[in-house]
Figure 1 (tube, rainbow, N blue to C red):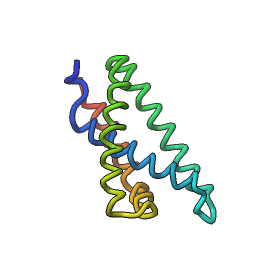
Figure 2: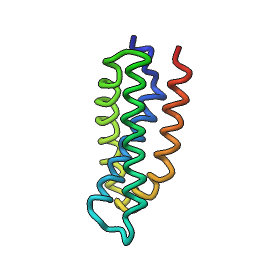
Figure 3: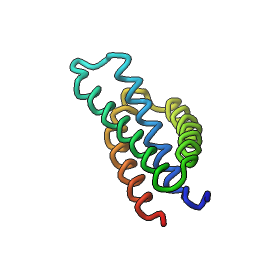
Figure 4: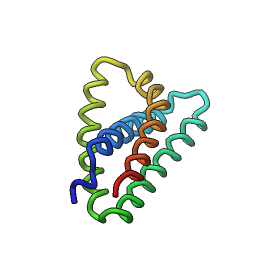
Length: 115
């Protein structure tokens, strides 16, 4: 059943959840002059991630979203920690506005191609 969790799904969800966490951290710090756009973007991204995990569990197996989330959080946390050593949080959150939709698209594309 683990063949239903390809490496491309693990990588794209790790990138998605890592940059979503950096977005949420920036919003909670309140460093923006007008945080409405940033709160809306983070909220929509979070709802997409939750909806994706629910649909993934419904269409494949109930336990795979839990496994995917755990693996993605571990890999994404390590990835984000290593990036934080070289790039500041402000730039990471700006890069996230590009990578979150791209990785979300890749997650959906991978899910469609699973048997």
